[in-house]
Image 1: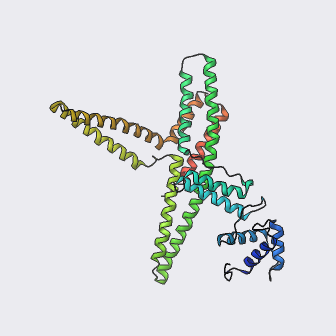
Image 2: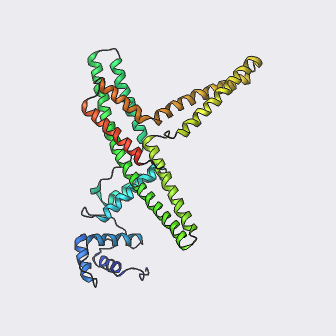
Image 3: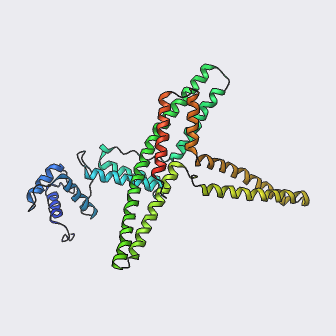
Length: 344
């Protein structure tokens, strides 16, 4: 039996009432009815709101006294808590802190508590991959117009590309909405941690205290939040928006080209087989690295590239007006996300 001395009078009464209505280990009730019933028993209480009852149930669950297995559609506090849990879970999936199997199991458990919320699973495909697919289809629309062939066949293919684009845009907007939810949650945590750090620093100056242990702990949490935010930006915008990474790739390419030229000169003079083998290896590395740099350059400015491609197709009247408007809206949302999650 748990020691209940540290529980509030309200928590004790909630547990007692739940035991009295329980069938076996399960208690089912209407929030409003249970709130009214408990409110009558608590001294000095003029009624008990369902919201206060929900908060109390959450506290008892956190302390290990009960487990909430189903939430009614009328719930406000617990439903909001479940939404926050999904945001946290999505952030863990994006940052690699939870694997897809565990993510699916945890999301299913949260969803089962309140089916009316209808949580959408986060796509395992990154948003940046969806952007690449959109760009590829936009370029295909341009190419099919240039291609020679039967007009009806070309029109049929164009309709297929447009339909695929529409599906991708709907999926992308859903994914971006989830990413924004995660971003807002992370940014809220970031601001709260920053505020606590500033308060402690000021307190140290005013009272001449050493609160370095608390500061270190908060700063570590702050760094974790920033890592998660960067992982989210990478998931949405791609991994190459950092100009430093592109510079590293280009620097490595320059070194490989210099090494290739040296080996080519040595091979002309020495004509040794091992030099030829090494030269071939370097050439293959250069080819692969050039592909990687090209892809990185696309990722680094993919929003701009998509914008230009959309403008081009719109001028050429190759995009239906509704599809054009959806793409413009997506681009606007992307730029907003980029600005929202940029912390300097």
